[in-house]
Amino acid sequence: MKVTWNLPGGEAVTAQVDYGQNLMEAAQAQSVPGIIGDCGGSLACATCHVHVATDWRQACGAPGEFEDAMLDMVDDRQDGSRLSCQIEAAPALDGLVLTVPES
Ligand code: FES
Image 1 (cartoon, rainbow, N blue to C red):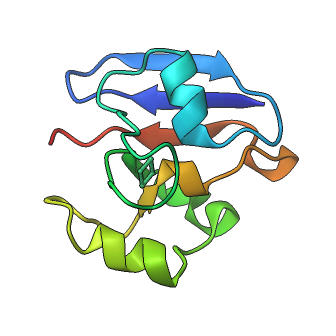
Image 2: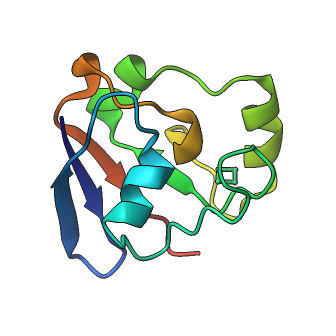
């Protein structure tokens, strides 16, 4: 599936991502700046924070309870905020657009 990460400086990274891979791992594989993934996807760092584009929020779903609690700790939480380690590549998300927050 295709995923686009919009970067704070106005550039973007677009890549093909295998189904089943989480989008933090996918971002690391593409060297997307700003997606760190310190905890390896165990919901303990929030360094994989992204903003999901408005059109994709329903398909991505809402954060789970622990994810929601972690998102309360990020600087620039928005309606579309998710931790990308908790989003798994799937056919319904083909074309997904994410934005990497500035902080
Ligand atoms: S990689 Fe740590 S919370 Fe997502």
